Amino acid sequence: MAYTAADIKKLRESTGAGMLDCKKALEESDGDLAAAQEFLRVKGLKGVTKREGRTASNGLVAAYVDGGVGTLVEVNCETDFVAKGDRFGELAQRVLDQAVAVGATDAASLLASDMGGKTVQEVLDEGNASLGEKIEVQRVARVEGDEVVSYLHRTSPDLPPQIGVLVAASGERAAEVGRDVAMHTAAMSPTFLTREEVSEEVVASERRLAEETAREEGRPEQAMPKIIEGRVNGYFKDNVLLEQGFAKESKKTVGKYAEEAGVQVTGFARFRVGATA
Image (cartoon, rainbow, N blue to C red; front, side, top):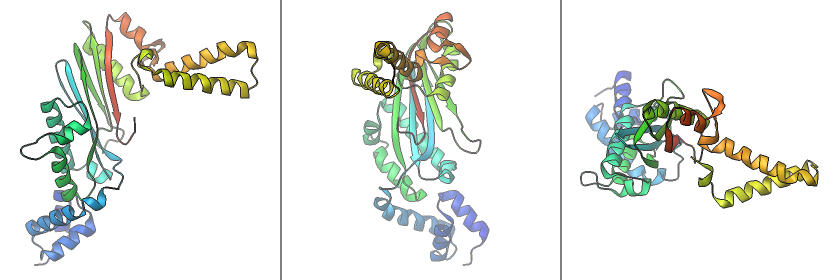
């Protein structure tokens, strides 16, 4: 049975496989689409181990909020072509639903959890096989509070959300303020909620770096303590959410903006696809 360009397109859209793989599958199955899909699935299963060393730096971030609990997952693949496909999106939704159902707080526990007789890892391996790319869950976060708000941001209109944020807050205007803070967090990528969360080791390292830099610049010895303290405080302003200048009102910190609104921000999580932190 002969096959057409339309058959290749249909097979590619239904499986997410590359064009050459689809042509090969149709040739091997004599143009039978169902047989071609099976061919790609079997071929994909054989290639799962080979793909383990590949980098999955594309994908999407998905979120779900139910009252005071929010779940955020990052599901990764190798190419943006697969990332924006329906099959990958459906797989990511299943992963998010499972994370919510089991109350997952990290990727390891989610991957080991039972998903209708298979672990999530086994389901991902099947997706790996059918889509022909390495598929993985890199990060999972669970945020709880009086009010939890989610915000998903698309860095490109033809891609799924690449940045996801959860913000927990309390107070009468928690939903409104939480939304503003979530959008700020997406743009400004803080690492910590408060400076108390920054480890002593990190602070000590920043102090050493500040001192070494000041000495290389030839700053006077008597000014060293003030210079070092100023630069460490600069690190906090760059990395601590509540001490960052608020994106919508830069003369205020995020903490001050929330305080004036009668809201307390109590937690957050932020993922960007492909980022390590």
